[in-house]
Amino acid sequence: MFSKKESSPAIEPKPVSERLRTQPQQQQMPSIISEGVEIVGDMTGENEIQVDGSVRGNLKAKRVMIGRSGLVDGSIKADSVTIAGNVVGDTSAKNVTLEASARIKGGVTVGGDLSMAAGARLEGKVTMKGADEAEKASAGNKDTVAKPNGSGNKPSGMPSGNTPSGSESGMGRPAA
Image (cartoon, rainbow, N blue to C red):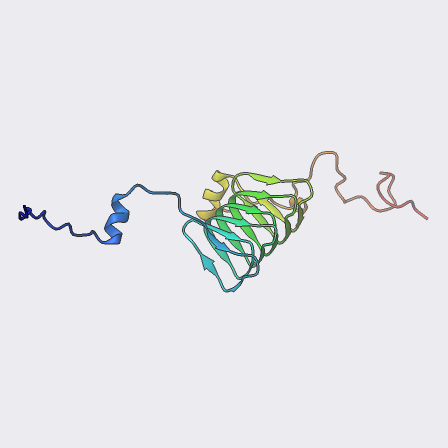
């Protein structure tokens, strides 16, 4: 009635790092800075950082999302940036999306697409860089820099500036 069962060989568990390598890659959850949380210092992430609280420092990640209640006081560098909250500092990304509630004080450098919804506020300079321009700039080639108009590259039809102010060109003040 009671018989001895054959024992099965013991199964040794694999270490976690080995299990993660053999399992299919799942979409990773973003690192979230919740509303009411303040981070002081720089943050770097390999995937996505979502800010609904405040960060007083620089952010660098593959994707950065600033929620409506989010504040970043520092620079942002990422492949993709979506801003619905406040940023005080420069933003540099391949693709930038500014939602209607976005408020930015700083420069925005875009290497791909820029989308700005009606109502978004941007107080700063926008620089659009194409892929070829980015490659030239990173190689140290300065041929892509435009020369200012004072260097002889005046558009046609513009006065040369060499006529006296009382001349009959109509561009200067009338002679008294």
